Image (cartoon, rainbow, N blue to C red; front, side):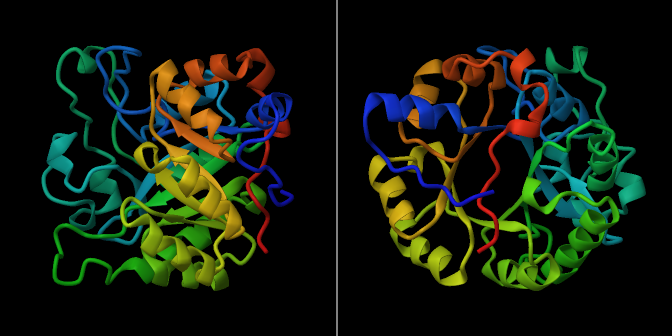
Length: 298
């Protein structure tokens, strides 16, 4: 897409126009297990969670990606399997075939409403490729291997190559993809592996120290948790020529605060509420063809 020209502040009319252009992304699909406001029984980065977010009218989804023992990209959020499934250990210790047999376990009441299993990225791409318009897809790479603490990033180059193969195989439109990671060597490798795909540096702490890294590495966006979403941080990112993606938030109050920052995209845990805040209807946004893109590669 064309580079973002929005600036923080401006007239109320401009703010309304800019907010309407915000890309609404389902965070880990429909978010995480939550008991209320809203109740969500679906696991993060599950196929059902993705379907729920897109069905609610999201422009796209963010999913978490890890590498299996046999070098297959798998959708899973947490560091260890026992936190959310009937498995043990790390994704890296199991084959993709074995991981696909694992059932998610959120406990009651969540498991009364879901029978999801761990899925691969390829399964997701197969489903998304059936849609008339490919939705926006944010791939959040969880590269640090908790079960290999001495060399947590030793397999990152393999993950980069595996993602490149899959995105090319399924002919995923480059302009619909944002690849997000905290690991700078992977960002550099992606520039060769997928030169037309937008890249985002995730910054979860030490914002002032990490922001120059994003500028030096030539990524298109910084990806920030809601707690780092401040007018000062957004202004600094804009002045560095970067787009801003924020993640998190379920309540109307939080969403209004994030929207006031005029981000380019919000990975949100409550898609219907975000669309309501933006004055969008689900019917209007079931087709994502007209949704704003992130910056095209510079």
